Length: 438
Image (cartoon, rainbow, N blue to C red):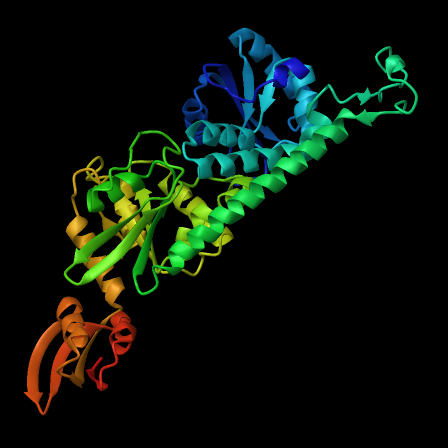
């Protein structure tokens, strides 16, 4: 089977998609997402094979009989690759390839392939390579047919016979060589990414005092379009899955005196391979360190509810389950009146309905973000020396002046200010800050 697995890419290959779900599973066996993933990877989907199974077969996952049916369909449709919407073990992949006689990929391999084609920056390429190697490492013993014992120079082979005294030996298994090389490369990649991670943490620490917002959501929900519309970021936008793998951060002023940092992240999918979540740790730090998450939802997608659940699962996995989240219902210009949109608006009454493409509803989004930024308003009385111009400037820039009185080298200012801005005001060392009304 070595020739079958010389490449895990599926670009321009004819693919049959397989979904096998347990009969007791409530999720069913829908292939909509896998179809989009396969097409994003460049495959041509020629057939779909959906099955309900009583139990997972340890040898072939779907059972030998169904594997035989799949082999018949492979021949009928002249397929080059079979892609499972399930996670297969190395032994199951090997057994299926022997029965079907073409390359077999599982869901994780397909997503890793897409990430590999999307990676443009050095950081993204390192992260993808690490994820691929960590996926491949435990599969080395089962996935390749060249794992024969290599005789040492001077061993039993004809080549070894000329090695001379002191070079004879039993040799080393190719598997051991491969594992050692993969382990070495994984260590190198982790070291490089750790350096990148440290630099990113220094960047994040340098943003202390600034309100940080991160766009999260399912892949292709419109996060990059929203970032461009709000900040003129100029991020490349494409109508395909995982178009963005790198984080982009820009300043945004949703209201006077409310300057925030807005970042986007990679898109999520259902069952995102944990190797990717781990290797993209540095990229996902933006979400982990954010003060507010904007969860962007594509309301034109009929699976929007499942996508919301998938995003929430990934957020919980990376430690963002308790973060403050503002739901953003995007692409309402496509479906102004739909049962799904009305249901989402009912389920999430505080969600903001927008169109990132046409700027519809962005004024409401700006007001909602400003309210989160302020954390509620307080009326206060600040006393400071007249020479302390920083206090007066801060109140004018971030609050609303109600009254000013000057006497004996001091200024007393009554103003309204956001609760979240109180620490920054106090860091400017006014003589006193008295809360009049909260």
